[in-house]
Length: 359
Image (cartoon, rainbow, N blue to C red; front, side):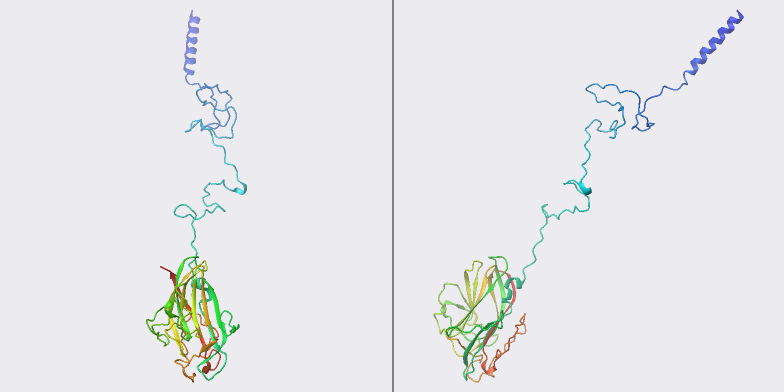
């Protein structure tokens, strides 16, 4: 009995010890996801259960994946966009903002989103009138009579100063065309200063003269001998003596149709005297058109640069101040045009000063 009680007590104590030890024992090992925070890096050995057809699976993959897992993150289960295709030479697909990447400078944009347009440079005077500016026309005496007129040697132009254009059939006729630049069909008011020595010409009542009566014959005097007419208004050669020189400027539009005619030496009479020319006028010229200089003399004789007329002419031959002209004419020898002052001929110079679009 004594031994039996002792054994019973020992067995009871062992059961108690076993019961207490079960509370402190470690839990069984749990498989870890290799891509979750805190994972030991070893893939789980357990096989994921098959998810219901209506619920996306959240079980970890049984094999390592090269694509990061989206489990437990916002948007889990959404389709993953394919990686961007690699472009040759490190380029970027079209339409992507490169943020300053080399070789991808975008064009400058205007206010409406269109590429900015650089305006053309402003039109210059030389682009508009060319060699009209600074053009010199001259007719020297071809003989040396003891009178206040002389035979015309022929005419010269500063376009080809060495070329002498002789009279043909006893007549002097010159026609020089100056192309006008600018925008075709656009009208420009071109300011010009005319210098020279000219004999008078009566163009009749078909022209409108600046002077209501006789012009001022003195250099720079007013009213000037300037006159104008519309084409078709009448025959300006039908009045007066055609043996006196005409000095004409014909304006042609961009279709080469004549739209205006101007005269530089208009008077109500003619005679053996000359006028000193130095005045400014504005002429309306047409972009893409022409300004035609035209001079005619029916007998190839001219009045000498002899002031009011009468010989001798040496002390009366005019020298016109052209110091303000730019450019300065080359080869102009005043007053004799390369001849003795007693036998000084006629000439005129065009100095273009500026322009504005016609109103």
